[in-house]
Image (cartoon, rainbow, N blue to C red; front, top):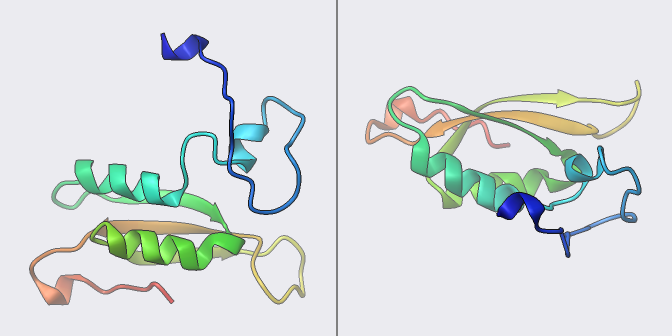
Length: 111
């Protein structure tokens, strides 16, 4: 079964491999990146369903591109700053939905 398979690779864009087994999956792309998450969300979202995901701010542009590639629009962003006075956020929570045929319903806030 898949539960017993060892993870043999991870994508690390910055820094080293975390040594803690509990936090490593939250800090490395063991299960795919934003592209895979947006792809899956796009397949399963229906009607007014929403996809909420948290991502490292270093991947902000990548998140925008993934959302657009999979016909999702970002309707809300919550930027979280780790330290007061920092120029850029530490991470961001994105709320997305599938784009509809009605253009007034696609207020994309992917800036």
